[in-house]
Every structure is written in C-alpha cells, then in structure tokens.
Amino acid sequence: DAKTTQPNSMESNEEEPVHLPCNHSTISGTDYIHWYRQLPSQGPEYVIHGLTSNVNNRMASLAIAEDRKSSTLILHRATLRDAAVYYCILRPTYQGGSEKLVFGKGMKLTVNP
Amino acid sequence: DTGVSQDPRHKITKRGQNVTFRCDPISEHNRLYWYRQTLGQGPEFLTYFQNEAQLEKSRLLSDRFSAERPKGSFSTLEIQRTEQGDSAMYLCASSLQGQAYEQYFGPGTRLTVT
Image (cartoon, rainbow over all chains, first blue to last red; front, top):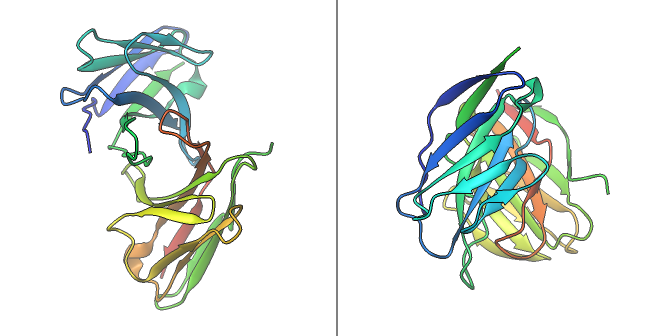
C-alpha cells in the first residue's frame, strides 16, 4: 500500500487560512489523493480528492504538486469546527484494485480562538 | 437519506462472550466496509462487500471475526470469544462502486471487553 507522510500536529488561528502538507513520494500514476478528517468522537468524514489538477469544493482546496509527490490541503478560513485529525490517503484506481482506505496516524489540527 | 447508522453505539462485554454489531448503509450504496480503530491510531481496514459478496478481508480479521451482508443491504460483524485486545471502535462505511468515490462513515460502535 502506498504510504503518505504528514506532520503529527499543527496549530492555526480561527478565521485564518491553514495549509496541511502531505508527502507521498512513492505515489503511482494511478493513485488518487484523498483527504478525510475525523472530528472528536465521530467517524471519518470525506473532505476532498484529486488526481493531477488542483481541486476546490465547499470545504477545502487541494493543491497537488506537479510531480505529484506532495499535496497540500487548504482550509481558507479555519473555524473551531475544523479542529480534527486529518488523513491524507492514496487510493489506487486500476481495474481490480482494492477499494479499502489505508489510514496512517493522521495529523491533528488545533484551531485557536 | 439519513446517512450510515450503526447499532449499538456502545457495548461492554466480558471476555469470552460473543458480540454482534449492525451497520445500515446509505440505501443506494452497493459497497460496505468495516474498519477498526484503537486509541490514537487511524482506522484499520477489516473487510468490504459489494452487495452481498465479501470481496476482501484483512489479515486482521481472525477466524473469531465474521461479517455478513445477506441481502446486500445491512451488514453484521460478529466477534466470537471476545478478548481484551478486541476493545476498539468498530466503524462501518458505505460508498458507490469505484475507487474514486468517497466513503461515508457511521458513528461507530465502541466495544469494551472487560
């Protein structure tokens, strides 16, 4: 299973942008980059995913490096509700590939009021 | 659409007892997944179904664990002869078919084995 590397934790201030990095130097050409987050006492929640191009949705933006060996999840205005553990996950897309999610330890984001 | 639901939310059992958890996925999702999460760790994959067919099982799924999805709708996860090491949060997720689709997680069942 392809691996990702994230910092153990980050802190941000409320209403400021926050950039969450992820390294995935062994990514293959068929791997999607997925981000999930897990709020305290809840199941994980999908945030965003992408393959090569940068992606935006109502929750966040995903910036993918040109060589695809790293990506950055961007929360444009952090709120207290964004305090969670964030997981960067690679998912293969080839026919017959496993559809399981392989979670690492993730990165704990603290948002200060 | 009420999302993925799991029952019970909490279960305390004595070592050696059998326990069964239920997961009700989002109705139009044909994929259903089970994960286990211990404190301070990310979720670990256990098994997944396409409709009623169990397509993949993790090495973590010992012979004391069995999962079913008899009619391709709800699923059950049974643990026989529970051990203290089985204490964890058991998470269920569902999705549409395909690796690009996101998985929707339920709130989990927290199992404590005493």
